[in-house]
Image (cartoon, rainbow, N blue to C red; front, side, top):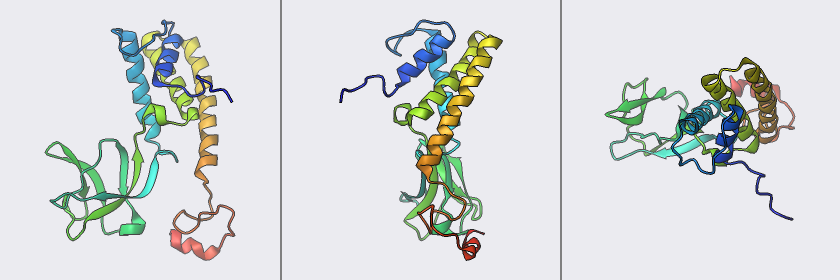
Length: 212
């Protein structure tokens, strides 16, 4: 089977799509001195953060372990969009938020009023990661590109007719994202991931108590 070079889009493809939506000429590289390219790329990355922060199956991990440092503090990686303590591992022992400590982003326990977690070597979190554009599912790439095109179009040319067309495209591509997420995530209303992985398993009413 032959390899299709345009089967998966790149950040350059997305930027060029945004440029064409505002009537600009596509470029061969992002390393060019052009204010239009800068605006298109910055808008694309802004939308990437916003969309990924919603939390999808491709960028969400549960019970992810992070080792504490020598001061028994937990430093948050800079590619984390959202972080929360995992209730199955820690119950309600902690109530954490992310907070800067001398310019370093760390986990802060509001319940204990401290950055320090004594008598522990690691903590387990539910994390939403910031994923590179290249690593996103194609449906998400298309949706982000169209949404960024609409925003860039409003910023650069402010054409109401073009904005309406892009809004329709944005709605259509988001529907494809949700369809992909439904297939990939194996979501169901009958049980949670901690106790059952089979979405078709028989519903047992007493399991409700475990989810309350």
